[in-house]
Image 1 (cartoon, one colour):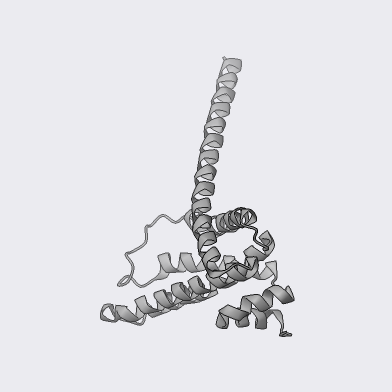
Image 2 (tube, rainbow, N blue to C red; image 1 turned 60 degrees about the horizontal axis):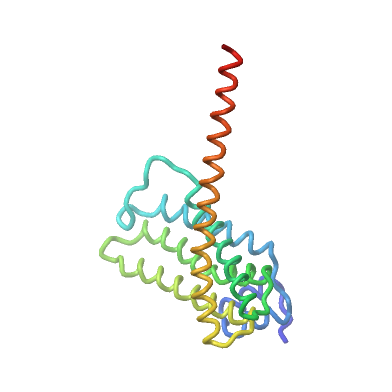
Length: 209
């Protein structure tokens, strides 16, 4: 069994997806601190792509800037993936804990994050006729991360190929349900806040009058 440092384990998992996550599992080498760093860089990469990408590859961004959509696309979506996968795989006799799902899934995002930053740099170097290189980098990062995510789920739950596919499909469905319920709950809280605030202002008005 490999005896590597944590950064070496991350590199091993990225470049050897079919055995890297298995080694991570058996050595219990993953760290949540790395997950927080990776998700933070995912958040930054999304901002960089939308705000700083060359205009010939991306339309000019809106003048108004808000971090809320980027938090949604990074932190919230990732959290929904982790919770959804843990919920589904608990029913499918998966062996992975929520902590390990979180760690392994975040490691799988590294190629996509790196590719996004590379795209931002290339957008200021390439011309529009060379967009094929820009697009190629995007798909390399996306496919690479997809392969890593598949291997991560397979390893963390000790599933077969077919069961891993089923688990991922059900996880995506669970994500939609979680996000729908979250939006519904947020809407209810917002309506409740407006109701309470209107009562509060009405009482203040009556008292002053």
